[in-house]
Length: 279
Image 1 (tube, rainbow, N blue to C red):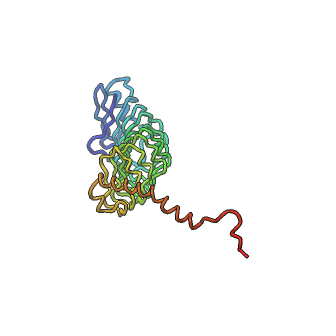
Image 2 (tube, helix red, strand yellow; image 1 turned 30 degrees about the horizontal axis):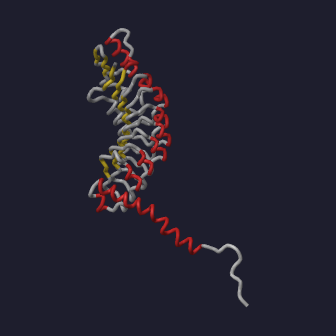
Image 3 (spheres, one colour; image 1 turned 90 degrees about the vertical axis):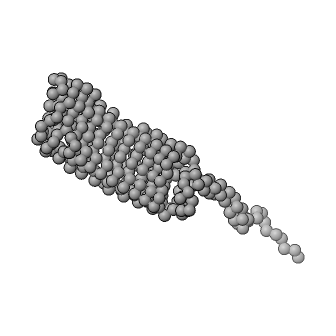
């Protein structure tokens, strides 16, 4: 098993002023500057063992560079499980990333992305961090990430969550803090969420279905213009919020009958001929 990791500071990989090191079960190699990534990987492998194959690399950390593009070499590391691209300036993510069918953790935090490519939804991700970007939406295909357990899209400009987000049946942690959300999808109530942070948005109503979130342990909702539940309920915590939602659910279930019958009485038209005038 091998790990591709950076030095504590490193300029862009195009220059590799302080190039990455590759650690394997047979040793490690610190490489000289001014090497392309592919050449660096080859030399690191050669220093460990003459015929060592880097396809067993499981972790790659390319954070804190000024990368404009993700190195294509990374997409050849078919055993890669963790990829950290934090703090870069990525213009695109290549479609070839779909070849990383062992990738379970992807960090795109602070990479200046405006959108996420749909191809990411074909990966076996369990953890996806795309916080502190300029995202305005998520791919509609996000529901295909059936194994996703943690999703962090905080500090973006997202106005609405995709309708298929309710298909993320493994999701345990969802962080949508500091976006532009006005409405929370009701389908989130069907997910096994343990942590949910939607603080610093524009949400005014928590769906009554959220009372069914039995596994929820942490709920962050401050800095929203909440009206239902009102602020005096929200500040008391999750237990009081769920009690309020349960009461509202009971009211909404009874309300149709009380409203429906008087309306029907006013609208009822007798069947058959009308009354006959007596002479």
